[in-house]
Amino acid sequence: MRSVRLQLLVTFIATAVAAGMLLHRGPPPSMDLFDAAYYGDTAQVLRHIQWGSDLDQAFPVFYGRDAPIAITPLYMAWDSRQPEMIEFLYAHGSREYGIRWRHNRAWWWLLPRELNKAAKGQVRVGPHNNTMWPRNAARSIVGWLSDRQVAVLRVEVFLPGARFGDETLGPLGRCVTPRRLDGERWADFVERVNAGAAEYIHSFTWAEKDTGLRDREPYFAFLLISRMEYESPLPGDLDVE
Image 1 (cartoon, rainbow, N blue to C red):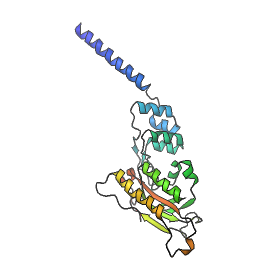
Image 2: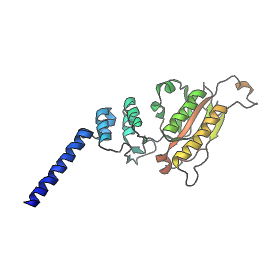
Image 3: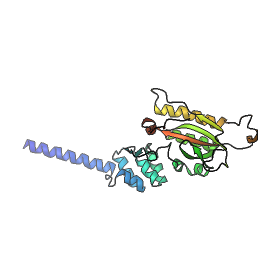
Image 4: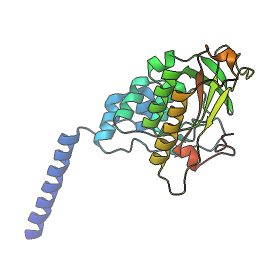
């Protein structure tokens, strides 16, 4: 009789705990986290958060240079062009975008609208054509990248008016960031190199020999890399020259 009472007591306690968790957390998610991110279902993602799902969980991808390095919830929101979901995930601590920032030509789509609107055109930087921005927008972008733990490998100066992929007017200047130090935390590396990039953009001036350019506003383009890329690089990913 005692064992039956004890078993009933244990069952009652377990049921009460489960009911308390359900009342505290709400119902469990009924949709996969990646699907919820892709379709912009914030209610389902919030359920995942309440039930302890890892918002930076990642499935590695191995099929090519232009492919993402991993499928993550942020990548799914980016891939389906869900800006509200991207901001929602970011606001709740998600930081792994999964994209190859160095090779992806559309990372700028993640930027706030006012920075997107400031883009001036595209030029060749590293392996792909990339977008260029005026000085103030470029500095803001470096800060935005720092918040997302993306490192600036290189900054190049261009002039508006160059044809798509035409480098006859640029690069007219270049800032190559130093290598990561042995044992340096990724956050410290990003802070160090991005501070250097921001200072380069802020202080850039035309050289004395550039007499015909003194009145031209310089524009800046970036070569970028994330921690996932840096630690799992493709051939040439860490080259900045």
